[in-house]
Length: 146
Image (tube, rainbow, N blue to C red; front, side):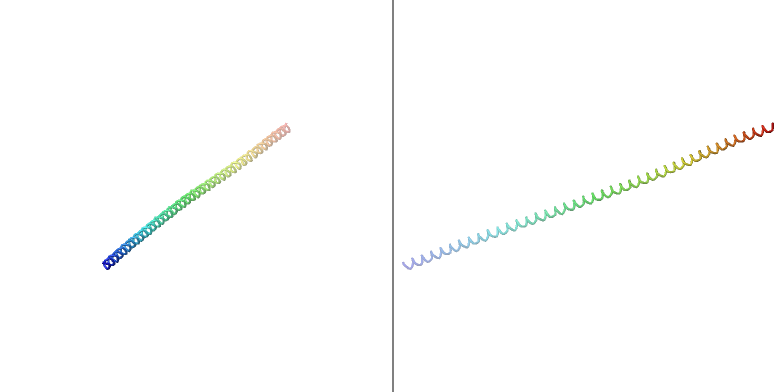
């Protein structure tokens, strides 16, 4: 009977030890599963974080590209405006030079015309004087002839 009790007690201890080992094994599996889940969750967070960083980097790259494109358009517009202003300045300069040439030509013509009028008036005065002198000479000759 004592042997039977001892045997039962040993079997019970064995069973309890197996149950404890099983419980510990299950707890360890549970702990390992939680660690694996946490590792996977962290990996997913890291992947999402990297994707977000990549998306932000691409957005920044696109923003910079658009800014550069806009800057180039503004530069081209400014260059066109400067070229147009230069062309306008040249046209205005040419127009002013044309006006100066025309004014100079007009002044030259007026000056020559005034010179002509002055010479004509002088020649006319000389002719008048010559005519008066001829009349006086003719009168003197007529008076002498009488």
